Length: 202
Image (cartoon, rainbow, N blue to C red; front, side, top):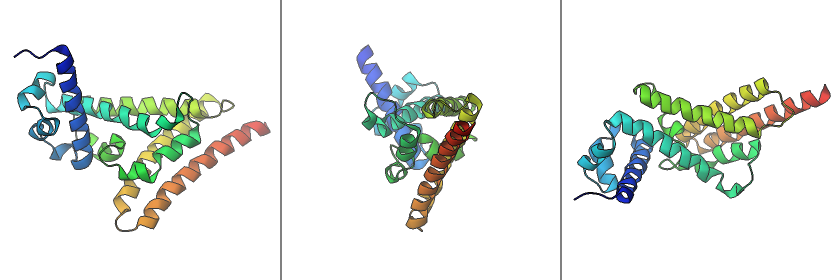
């Protein structure tokens, strides 16, 4: 039976959502196409009707999951653009750390990406560049462009690493795990504040 365009689009989204969630929970290498199809309530044949290979699915699922994760984190901002400090608070939160199935895919999968193919690496790089650009726009307008870029790159890379480290230590040392998030957040609040102060003094 022929599937309508609407149903095909729905199936594709279901597969991407299922793959994104499973990759974050178990890791890319521990999830097979059979697992993804089952999670989405579809057959393996339906999966291969949309994706030529697992690598193609991984690359698109990564982008799909990342786009949704950060949109959810700042949804409370409404129509306004959240400030740099609000992005820090949203990403470096206990909720972000504990949402393993729906949180940032970079946190869950960055150590695996280097072992994946070019398409997955390109998806990771594209997402990283996008969110560096988002953070650049939230930094104070008085800061020059090269400094903004350096702060944004350092901040985003540090956020991903901090959540991963905090997540790894939560069971053994929850107080230290919380301190990691708080310390990185405070460090970049200070970096932003100091950058503004230096320019104001010129």
